[in-house]
Image (tube, rainbow, N blue to C red; front, side, top):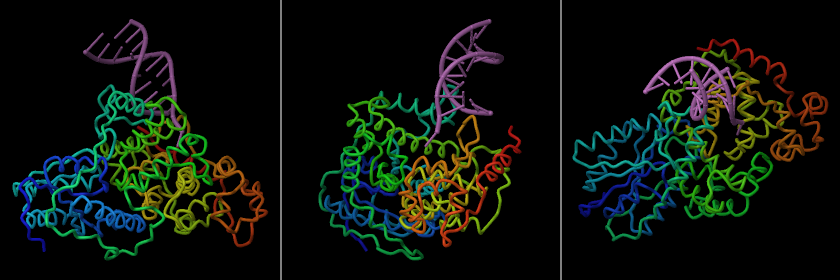
Length: 478
DNA sequence: GTAAGGTTAAT
DNA sequence: TTAACCTTA
């Protein structure tokens, strides 16, 4: 038990989804006022309820241990406590405040309903004790709610949102905040994070570096070597064309504002214009902002509901076998199986393939998109509710997209287009290693030439496409 | 100022 | 087809 007397201007910074020193709004604000103590609450039960992937929990614990050292080097002690569920958070934070005799708490805001409710309860309880609470917008370049359409409502379509976002950000590029400088010794022992967590069977995440400097280095490498070709390479799942930074963004190990500003710097200071690759990548950052703004404005979608209410009436099929075949990469569709096996093996899947596997589940198999959404959350190292939900609702046509046609990807045309040689397919589905590439991209040729130990395709692509279109066209819109 | 109708563009 | 914005009356 810590029994030290801390200076009156000492602050507690509650770290959550912002596990970094650089450009951290709450941490920088607290450090301005005086010495800082950092804390983190492990919520093992809550994380189970949120379907958090074991590899993501492992990544968070590894990041916390690295962060504990990084803070220690600045004489900032980090204390780690457990609050099984968010309900227990007010008591856990309250106890810390009491032990330390601290008068102010700072934290960066989160935007999902459970987190918002937790923070309100913590604030109420600290208010009663006369502790000052400060919360900050930090996770995004533009905080939720700041962009409104001409008629005053939130944007429901990406592309006008993007234009408004670019106009706003171009006129006032964000200032990056420095990491705190080294502070006086407080005489408080740090409490290092655990390597294991009760109730969890963690999955090794060590392919993803935990040090903050490593995240910066990954960003720098991407900007120097790959962003120029991003527009052409990002859709090729066999190529290292994407930035692969999502895991760091989504635990807050890397600041979205820093990433944007460094991308702007490599693009001669331009945003929205200039190099095709840079513009394209920055627009992917805007998708992240768009989906966060959406969950903030429309909490219904966080609670298992479709963004377009009329699509709640779709008659989804129910088939444990089909769902299991999809999860295990045994559907008989080569690209879908490659993606699902990459996910199971590594906790990550290429973005193009995420769309294709999601479309296959929700359209060809006509299984409820929420089953796929949950499975992805349970597997992905970068599983982020807002972004995963946005992507799934886009694929399932229950979301914000206002396309003039009902979109059903044909997985064979997609593999022909983006994995013509079958490099990605053969990497993840070794049974198909000896197949001629052209036999992978055609349902009849595949059926005639597939090896006996690779499954027969579980669904007819043409017929299931029609089935999906009629399942949606039956709906009464209003 | 407002409502109605036209235009634009969508991973 | 739809949202968002623009033009016109």
